[in-house]
Amino acid sequence: MSRCVVVGGAGINNYDRVKKMLREDDYYIFCDSGLRHIEALGVMPSLIVGDFDSYEKPDINVQTIVLPTVKDDTDTVYGVKEGIKRGYDEFLLLGCVGARLDHSLGNVYILMMLYEKGLKGVIVDDYSVMELVGDEILEIPDSFSYFSLIAINGAARAVTIENAKYNLTNAEIKPSYQYGVSNEVIKGENARVSVKDGILLAIKVF
Image (tube, rainbow, N blue to C red; front, top):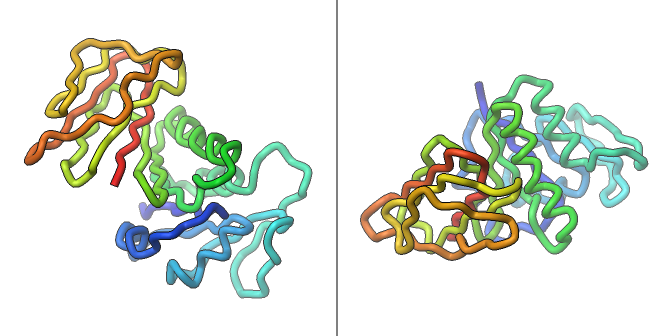
């Protein structure tokens, strides 16, 4: 099945980089002020959702779900849930990390929601690619300048890092001590990361 791309309203400066990550068969859900990215991304929405408190509801022939302004889900969370309801198991989140730390953190935890459902989620911003890593090995190519591993859901145990400047074997990373920040991939290699108990947020920096 094709991938679901969810576009939020946070800033995107490097559209050229993002556009290279898009696929011809992507399904696009634009969330409220994420609509301001349509022209620069060069794609049309497959679905629009939002309460339109931060962006005017567009007059285009695209299915649109108008949400109440008082609700538990943010527009972006609702958009992801709608993608799940429509059967998508892979998600790319754009315009979801920016100046608002509260929205940014909330959107990062969308990755956890997807992970708990056995679904794949990736966030791309102007600086990095973010995804969760558990017991399945995550390979990080040397095309990334740096990578960081952040414990975001309690302690991560039996953490192994290979082919990096700072390797680990059977280590533990706790939320109270985030020492997995700013590692580097050995040139010519792919770093390999796995976690036997827990989850880490892998942030791969361009």
